[in-house]
Length: 123
Length: 107
Image (cartoon, rainbow over all chains, first blue to last red):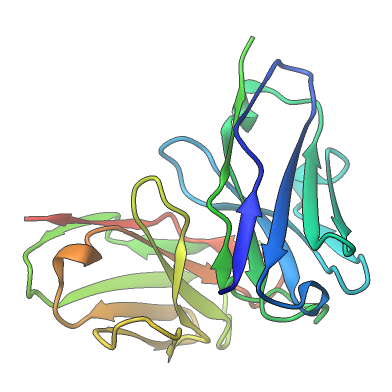
């Protein structure tokens, strides 16, 4: 069964960084892209960016450009999303989600999702 | 970025009802539209992709249609497990964007 297993909940202080992991199992990791999507409490879904495990290419939504970094480790089939300079507005559940193409140059739908990692930013 | 507007933002319905949710795009998106279901405390779950293709394992009571800038998700006969929030997503171009969601509640 295809699965994305995410790291546990984090509590951070304003100004700190967080790094969330997403380990894939049940499929060939580098044949599918990985998206990161976040959801603030009681709010909708917000796409943050995408990485291709096949070639390391990334795309970020403009508001996270320079503050978020997405990487992969193909040896462990794990994707990472690091977000820096955290503020209370970054309090959210962060999801990784697979898309069915590794490096198409355009976005796709997301067919497998991790359970989410809750990141709380509080002083 | 392409804006997606869902309507209604919430609705109340009874088991067995036919439910239709609309998603309007700020510009044409071709066939790059998907629908997700999200239950409280859970991750979104893909229902429909490419406007009308049913994801494997999703009940046939769900269907999608539309073209251009207007799309619909229809649940032909609402079941107790269908009470959830539904989101549309466009993947016509970067950045992919989501609609604001439609919460389907029990009447």
